[in-house]
Image (cartoon, rainbow, N blue to C red; front, side):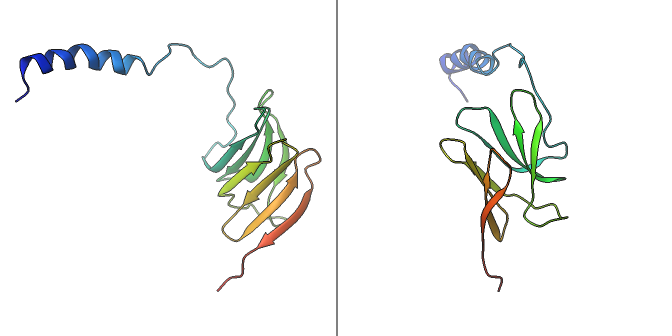
Length: 122
């Protein structure tokens, strides 16, 4: 059984700790980039763009200021890729997406794929 002093401390401190998690302010903006969920996501260092690996539409590059999809980035034409990892170069000029077998380097300005690497299947 807890000692009375410890119990009193818990009664006082626990509500304070729980209330510290909520700033009370709602976000000023929000966009839903992956309606059914995402396998991965990455934010550019300047916070202006994001790469999302969506469960339903594969990979895509988004603006964070307007919530607009700029490019669809899938590894095979006509198929949605399961993008399980994504990232940006420090300067934000390039992005990398990866599924279970392939990595693709993208030009984040033009949306064009620059090169890809694939792992052998066995």
